[in-house]
Image (tube, rainbow, N blue to C red; front, side):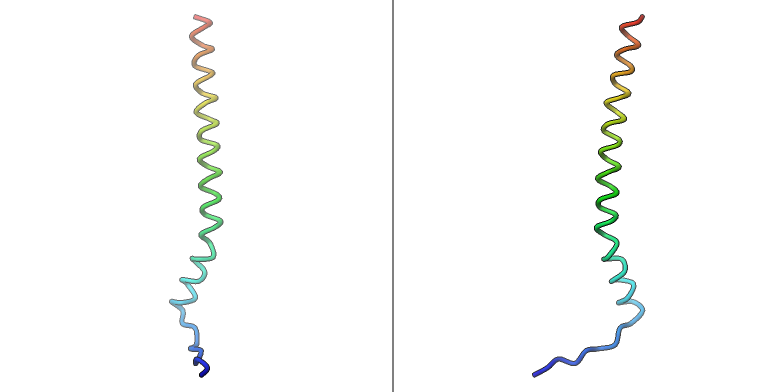
Length: 54
């Protein structure tokens, strides 16, 4: 027996659109975390260099 396909509703379309954005959001967050870690490490090295000069 075949299933009847119901027409899309605006709510379902919004959910599908939001679900499609999840991989992009996740990759952006991972990239942001990596940049933050790199920035923190860079800042730490700069602070250590300042101490050595003093």
